[in-house]
Length: 578
Image 1 (cartoon, helix red, strand yellow):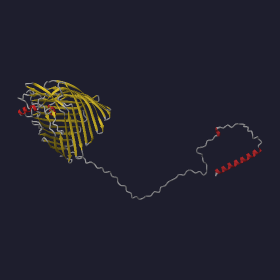
Image 2 (cartoon, rainbow, N blue to C red):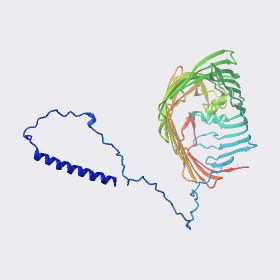
Image 3 (cartoon, one colour):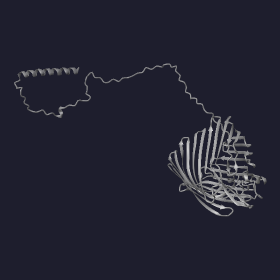
Image 4 (cartoon, rainbow, N blue to C red):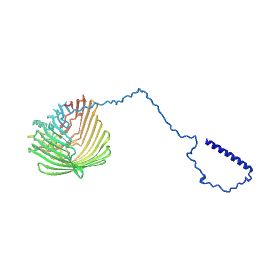
């Protein structure tokens, strides 16, 4: 109301002023044509006023803002909805494969071949176990064109005991082996002489061994092992070998240097040498130490070390000392895709009658045995993964071997008056030479999944000899392929293929009339393909079939020694637990 009164007063004042002003104009005597300004208007800051952003209100009807209150009137409502209880989705699980500790295999094949294996393992307690292995493989032979017995057999037996404790684990094992074969590779020109002398071509080897190893936890001594073998044959030969080694960490200025210490003793005898009736003895012992220090820096790994050996010759009493480099390195250029590696190593290689007869079972028991001095083995290569399931390895190497072993056909003495069964051009001896070897190799491995695996490898070698005309019986090319395929739950298959390039051997004859004659013989390259197919009847029983030398080549791995042509073998395997 106060606001309206104020407005009425203002309007009244304005009307009054207008009326007075009009009266004055009627009585005004001033000339309106001219206006004289006595004093100009000068504004000041005090004349201005600021409009308030929020004006104050003094209206009587203006009320303060009232607080609004909300109330909810809730009441219970009956519900018939019951949520279902959640359940995990059902996933079909593959039936776990039952693993058995023991198995037995039996098989029969062409050439009257018999194959048998039994493997046994039994856990005595949580920390102890005992096991054994028995095997037999034999064939009655029957190679086409061979005039002498060509059967062979190989029987083995082995037992072992293992214990696993908190701070260490150890095991011991022992075994026996008997291997028989025949010197059936008599040259065709000498067959009548050998048949006339009614030679006995059988040659039997036997071997008995005992050994053990131990591994420690959280100590400077990491592991140790020993091994003893007695080896001999039915020709009066005998050989003893004892080996022991230990691996320790030696602390030096806060760093640990891994060091391997080895001891190797060899002693043996032959009834005679090849060209005389004198007994032939050989033997030596060597002590070696190989320290190595590893450096790791991001993608680079370097092992720095050397090998030092002391050798004592049993027969001559000579003492020798050898030092070899032992340096290796690897560098990841592109993660696991491209890894460069290389190294230079060397060592004193102990040759033995057992090792030589295993590599070539047609050697004569008249060998001169001494170690090989491998001065260095320098190599460089690239390896990595082309994909998640394919890997590769490409390398090149250069070896310098002094007194390298070369197998060479023994010289034939045409005077068979008192000839031994192995002196009809049907045995091999060894010669030593300084051989430098350049090699290149490439390898691809494919592991698509646990059901399919494939591997291919190829190697090329070039040899340089010092005294011998050729690197006897060493191939220039080698290749291999292996395939393993689990077709489905029951069927499985596999294959192995081998290729060996040309080799050279020496045919030498001493004729009482014409003297010594010799000629180099080229041995053809050969290809050997083998395959197998099997079926799992259940978790315990499987049947299989094998085919060897599918190409049906009666190739000669050694001169005048053809192998069996295509062979078939079928059998079954039974797995079990006690």
